[in-house]
Amino acid sequence: MESKFKYVKVLDGECNKEVENPAIKFPFKGDNFQRHSFYCISKDENILVTAHTGSGKTAVAVYGIAHCIRKGKRAVYTSPIKALSNQKYKEFKELFEVKFSEDIGRPVSVGLMTGDNKINPDADCVIMTTEILRNALYDIGDKGRTKKDEYFEDNFINSIGCVVFDEVHYINDKDRGHVWEETIILLDSSINLIMLSATIDRAKEFANWIGSNNEKIVNLIPTNHRVVPLEHFMYSDNNLYKILSKKEQFYDNNFDEACRVQKEIEKNRKKPGNTYLINESVKFLKDRNLLQAIFFTFSRKNCQKYAKMIKINLTTPEESIEIERIFRKYMHKYEEDYRRIPQYNTIKDLVVKGISFHHSGLLPILKEIVEILFQMGLIKVLFATETFAVGVNMPTRTIVFTEIEKHSNEGRRLLRTEEYKQMSGRAGRRGLDKYGTVIILPLY
Image 1 (tube, rainbow, N blue to C red):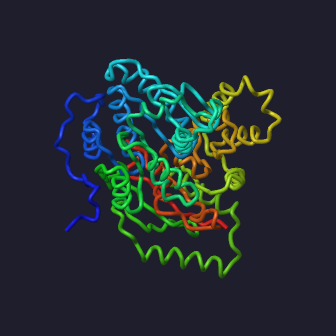
Image 2: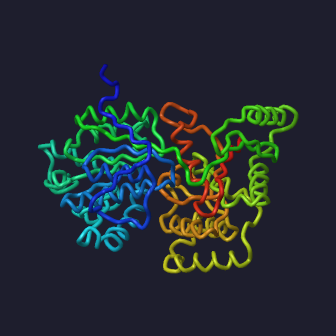
Image 3: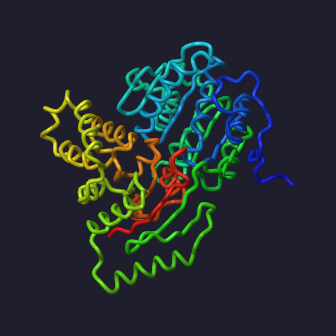
């Protein structure tokens, strides 16, 4: 009987195969999923890797790009948002133009294409949003286009050897998923596909669709291993109720008790205000050594509003002095222009207390300062929209969900599994935490 998934090969066990003459040499052996990926890439095979946030998927992308460039072809790395494209541009410039150029045998150029930036578009490795690649593929068949309308030179698409689709689970997004679908269909079957995702629904069906589209086997490489395991809790009445263990055991009694307590609070007394809840929860986390924490919310307005609600100072005097020094260092050229802007003054007042917010509407220079301070551990509590989970690779001790519903084109809906996993996956810092903490905090 013919297999339902005839274009899928699952590789989820130990990898005993070694790559002869690897494109680059990493200073580590690699986990099984990485070694499976490196071997398949060396054989010019398509792969779909599903691995937790922070597990090392970037190494797979880097190896695939290096292998492609060493063969004399161009590599394209696509991401769902500009913030991630910008971050990867900086990261890959350092890796390919400096660190791995000797392994590859020559200097490697890196370019960037987003709606805002066009840097070295004819580079060996070009980083772009998926929409940019889709539009470039449509350009090829558009005979009415002018030179001004073109995204790239005519030979650009023909020179591509591989495409990395980071966060490929966006293909399931009702609003934007068609972009990934169209791009994959339009790509020539000779182009190798490296698809990466923290999680994707019905991975076998998806891999089989890819394979049937270009009649090539797709190697599905899953891993459930997390270097830093997660524990999931509900917060109610200044208590944490564990609802999911490090081994993913669901505690239904705790869940029921947390819901009961919450209903009792709402029934017997006035709902506590968000100012009270946020301050109590932040104090709770501080007292239990659970900071740094990212509080995820799904509106830019609430990001700022919640951050400004915090009354307590989370930094030591020494940390406040260091924050002020860093802020001056980055802002001294722009202070005259920015100090009349409310957002500038709000951020300046908040970061000194170890608090901030992060969303797509934040001024770029302020966003950079916030990210630097967070990476240094000087911002203890950050209110962020979900773009921070996708666009910025910064793990933290604790993740807090202020809500588990978000707006979409069809109204409010619950978070999808992959969205929750993407955001909660930022909890747990490798080498620092034994486990990451994820908390659901119901705000009103």
